[in-house]
Image (cartoon, rainbow, N blue to C red; front, side, top):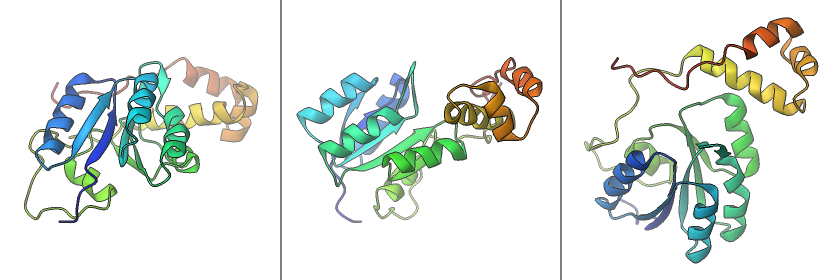
Length: 188
């Protein structure tokens, strides 16, 4: 295995996911610090610029996208990975444009993270505690993300967003009233 990037920053508003991922990475010799919002993540990164940062897209009411550029300014060679349970092409493109190195679905397994960091996987090892999702992101969630990207690009103008999406304004307004749930639990 290559020498691991031994100091990382994990940013997520889910404390259980953070602790689990931090413990699993520590067993592989990768030390990390954690943060659950943008300000604490920037504070931790300024104290000791990490070799890599794993950032959740949704941090409560904040967006992890806002961390990409400030982290890149702190350390040019930092590997920045964006993770999200709301994967969409639009947010992936935006993250890469802002300077992220990779975009991973959540929950990201240790193998996915190591691969994105350019580390070699140890053959035959399975993730110990962080499991991959059992179901794909629902199409309603992907459609919602696509609509949100169109609204973002048109400055919130519903008529312009409808034209951009190739649909009638009233159809778009109906879709906006039917916000999908974040994710369904496949075990229910």
